[in-house]
Structure formats: structure tokens, C-alpha cells
Image (cartoon, rainbow, N blue to C red; front, side, top):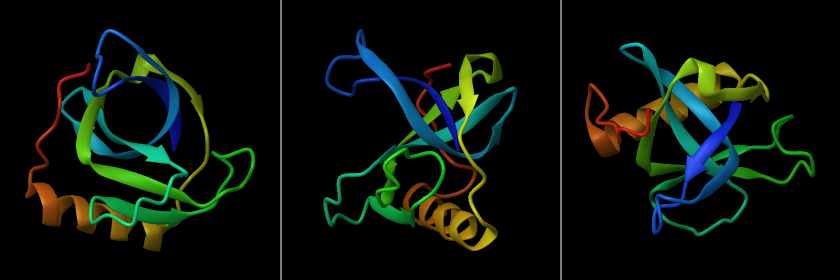
Length: 108
């Protein structure tokens, strides 16, 4: 888990610093998915639990509908390491939705 600037889906000219889960490398950039604490009970929100990336320790969900590409230099800070089981579940859900290799949105 790291923090980086994420543009808004409805207005890419704006955005904010957000926690993201790193799913792996896409060439020279990181493939990441945005985290949220809002449980929308949707199939594109994967529960990942709580961790040091969230100050309030609220449960987090990975939004797997949009895979972003982030340059390593654009990572603002490290948040935490997701345990192996939760990481493998997240990657499995990403593969189920997007196939493999993962398709990405070019934000880098």
C-alpha cells in the first residue's frame, strides 16, 4: 500500500492524494488500484480489511474496476504491506475481472 495522486474519474483534471494497493509492475510503472472506506456492496469492490494505510483503521475496499499506472517517483509515501492472503485474493479478483495480463488505465 502506498499513497499517490489519483485523478477523479469524472474530472481527470482534478484529484487528490489517496492510498492505493500495488498489484505489480506494468513495465517501468506500478499497477495500482484505489482504496476506499465506503462499502458499496458491489462486485468491483474487494474487501481488504484494516491496516496502517488508514489512520482511523476503518475497513478498506479496493476498487478493482479501474487499474491505474503510477510512476515509482510519484509514490508520495509507503503505507503498509498487505498480508499474502489478502494480496492473493485481490490479485485473483483483478484477474477475474480484467484477465491477464491486467489491462491498465494510463495515468503514468
